[in-house]
Image (cartoon, rainbow, N blue to C red; front, side, top):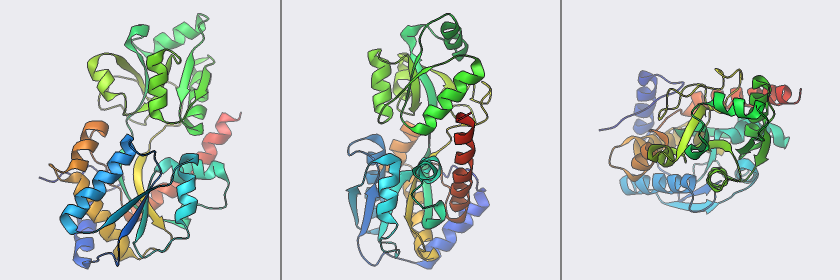
Amino acid sequence: MKQFLKAAATALGLAAFATSAIASDWTPPGPIKMMIAFTAGGGADTQARLVAEDIEAKLGWQFIPEQVTGKGGMNLAMAIKDQPNDGTVIGMVVTETLGYNMRAANAGVEPSDFTAISTTAGFQMGIVSQSSKGWKTFADVVEAAKGGQEIRFGVMSPKLADLAYLLGKAQGVEFNIIQVKGGKAVMNGVMAGDMDLGFMAGIQAKGVAAGDLVNLASGLSEPLKQTPEAPTLADLGVQYNSDGYFAFIGPAGMPAEARDAIATAIADAISTEGNKSNGMITKAFGGPVVIAGDAFQVMAEKDFAAAGELMSAASE
């Protein structure tokens, strides 16, 4: 059974896309170098490698993983932009790379300088604390802050730091914002008591299920799947959010038949029950989310524009 979970694309549109890509019968002219913007052994790195493994098993394509980490995916973006665009080089980033991080880097590149191939999964970005803190809702955090308690708020990117700042401003409190490298570092900081709460993008799921952690709020434009009762940032007075996806990109100018064939192979791998990538994505992120081709390109360009608005709001 194959299950496609969609955002910014209709079922019919995705089916038509997949059918046309399969019909093109494109195959890579050689091994595919798969750059990965995440630390080896982490959840995102594992996801990328499992996607490659599933595609190799079905189609016989060969992937050569290569870690290109740093600067929120910008090191990968700058490395991939001048690579061959014949489908033999792709990279896994987060959509924040093409939005906030690319805008902040001011490196002279925009999403149009890359080929958007496909997303794989959405973030389940929550604002999380240890259950032992005794906070049941985000209102409890605000009450503690207004009562004089210093609230140490862990984040793993400048975008999330801006969101944490705006959240405090909207609630009439000031957080001590601590930026660290990666969601695991935020979780470790919260569990060690070095942070009182922090943004976590799905890594908290097991702890929440066990009752050790609590999702106090959703960082998304919609409720979290695990705890739909938690308020969104909009509910808390912030018009911006941390919506984002894990995604594959390529150099600019990739032929449509190559882009679409790779996107279809990715979608098939992550959406086929029994595949390793499907199991991992379903467990960690609530299921695959496929936004491919032109729809993904448009979304990336909108995110890039919205990043400028967020930066302006956070600088006021």
